[in-house]
Amino acid sequence: MSFPSIKQVRAFVVHGGGADYHDQGSGHWIDDHIATPMSRYPEYRQSRQSFGINVLGTLVVEIEASDGTVGFAVTTGGEPAAYIVEKHLARFLEGARVTDYEKIWDQMFFSTQFYGRKGLVVNAISGVDLALWDLLGKLRQEPVYHLLGGAVREELQFYATGSRPDLAQKMGFIGGKMPLHHGPAEGEEGLRKNIEELAEMRARVGDDFWLMYDCWMSLDLNYATRLARAAQAHGLKWIEEALNPDDYWGYRDLKKNVPKGMLVTTGEHEATRWGFRMLLEMDCCDIIQPDVGWCGGVTELIRISAMADSRGVMVVPHGSSVYSYHFVITRHNSPFAEFLMMAPKADEVVPMFSPLLLDEPVPVNGRLKLPDTPGFGVRLNPACTLHRPYTH
Figure: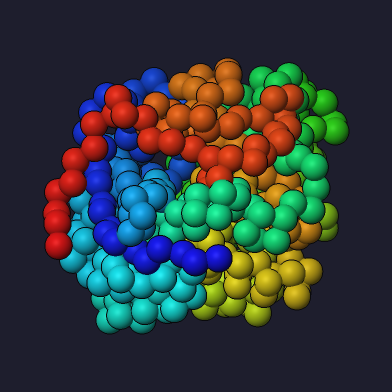
């Protein structure tokens, strides 16, 4: 089969209309009093937007083939990432074959290594890589999960991340992951409140429903150990991203310290095979949670997952909607998926990227069968305003 070459790469940001999926404001559970690395400062404790979690915004990458077919993807990074895509990364794609995603990834990563390696630059690389896979699926008229080897199960099953696991249980999810509300700076009273909240939720959902704590990099080893041990009585399934993501030694010790049977999970803010190699070789966790929009895209996630599989470690990607669903359904060591509850009160199932994406599937009764729509199976909403801040 003859494929067209890549004609142009374009990078956009979202302007207004509620389409920026990082812009949940006052009253949204995601922006509530949640433990973060900034919780040590009282003035930045009540709202994550107060310390700037929303400053970058959404990045949309489009890749157009010479026959006019367009693939696209959505991730984070906003204008700084758009600059990197347009001014640096585009040169490695335009004129190249669509099927050369391995070579393209290699060139994008190593050409930016002197100022990248993780964070914003790898977010930009991830957006380009995902758009390339979307384009490849559209050209082949196949969903991305077919390109990744095909589904190994009939449907996905989900746990829900949100402030109301009791409501998630009624919606058919297999578990509920709650945000931790109080960090070390709030002392013994904060720790007590965390455990009381867990105990109250356990009483609501019964003994068989999974409950987990998302700590969002906010704890130290001592506090995380005490939290895990106190939470054992209330059946906490796992403690997630408790420490600074660069503290591999702390994660190694935390995994040794938690009660038997409790899982330690992390990796949402890790990137590339080299970062995950550290987590795996140092035996830092039981589940790794790469975000496909931040870790290097599908091309890199394939490598990360293979490393984890060889060590018997599960891979449960962070959020990411269709971009992770198409991967999870093709891997035996990804037995379930995360669904991020985007409704302000976590009381209904709504698409993660709404209104920016159209046709975005959502689980029903905690389960989802992926459609056979080419690419990732979603469309950009023409009613949303995109701005291209840079050209090359």
